[in-house]
Picture 1 (cartoon, rainbow, N blue to C red):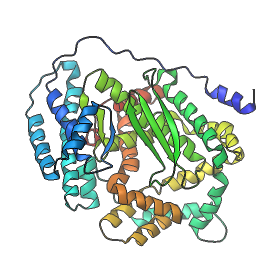
Picture 2: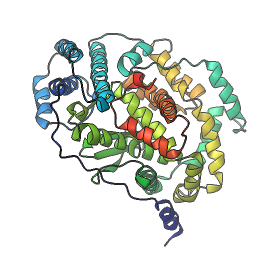
Picture 3: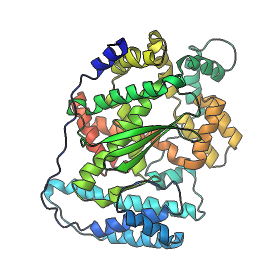
Picture 4: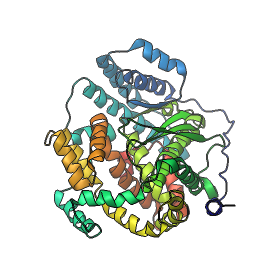
Length: 441
């Protein structure tokens, strides 16, 4: 057996995930069933005006066809959404005591999602919102304002790692060139990362998913994002990886965890298993992208990288497996991740660039320059990031603010029990629930 396979075999020696069985007990009458159906149909109807709005749908196919055929005007959709808010707010229901919190979360979820929908409908009809107004209305959260001085202090520390000629970003770009995954090795490296992320997430019964879960990977170009999970229903996903720009070795684990295990694929599969199949809560068969649900989705996907791998585990796996598969020098793993840890402290610079750009305080060129100077983006990556901001606007807060909010919530729920077992328990409970950003505080 080749050395790489031996190393992978050692990493794979974690147990297989268990299989969830769905109870055959009859479900009680659901007082939200009618409003939940109306909500799903409204999301699909908004999607006829906004191509990015419906991120996933695996409910009745005829509902999508009805939405496509009707193409209801935006103003009428807002009227229907307002009426649905009133109907949901008026529901009086006393669930079993042991299930009070979940039903309360469900009601809050529907109301918040509808409020967000109405904000998006307003934007589609020309309503102008500031960056912070938009993020609060759509995602139920506002990112902190970070002064330039905060980023400049970090940049001074990075300078110490990047001696030589040229600007700091030029030196950083030359440095990172040593850590690009060769295209011929990309799929091999990515598949190894997926297997490891799966074992770290599903092994030892940390997360239990259906035995039928899986996803396939495609490599694409011409996108504003680096990776995307398209959830298909029935515990299946399509994950696309954008290869427009060079892919660095750290992105293998990041994308495999974020898009797959224990990120978006696991999140959507658990919602389908726990809320749709077990409870019959049909509102979770649709996922509107511009909604509070996205902060939870992106926040858990990013925090999930930390949950799946401790820093020591990740460094060991990178050195033993991924760097070797990519043909990179494993002796430089620690050095590389020390630099990345510093650069990660600049992540909120992307929020600041988006905030100032959307609020009209800087031009397009100014936003690109800001990303280059304070976010350590090369020019091509800054331009790609601005394409993302043009398309998704304040959505950018969901990645870093979402991760910070999810981490704080899970750690608070863990209390004094800081064991990995308790961390996985609280993390999985969050993935399986309708809890939204304001519920993390």
